[in-house]
Image: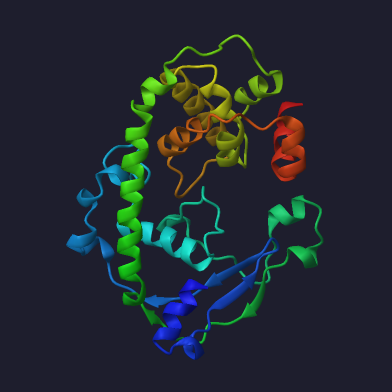
Length: 268
């Protein structure tokens, strides 16, 4: 992997030994580093990347530059295979506790042993310096800003105008209309992104869609409030960008069985 190419150039491979946990669905890798506050560097100041930080619907509105580094590191360490919708923040970077159980695995029918959090490898107290990565991070965030600027230019109009075009308002899907009236205890991020956002993007103008989704999130919060790291404006805006279409119920059952079970238990 690319990261090991960097580390090997400094003759540090033998020193690297991160903590590795089995979480029931995959592995979590934790590698502490010697870090600095990237937000204090003039080269990485937010005003140098207006397409990423300037407006509430910007890609990284409300994030610290140091939090964007977490996203960069996630992409780097997974060789680009990380969930593109996952945007880690300080408040959401929580570690799973060994010898506890992954509730989502249990809900999918896995046994206690299969769902148990296990320590595969322990950290050896070696902290690598963040300077090994800052050069690559600066290049990456600069390219992110360029890409976002080109995307906005290519669209040729604002997000609001894009949704104010002529759209079909009459055709409704019964189970989704029921879902909009019910708050869910879990899975609201995925429900927004996979179902409600793309569904409303074809049926309502932007302002109406935002209002409906905010009301739905309020219903979810009345069922089970979220404590950390959930930015409703950002999540709503991201979900409405998905105009490829919502997941049908049968597709949801095959691809996201845990979410399918949550939704069906609340609308039927």
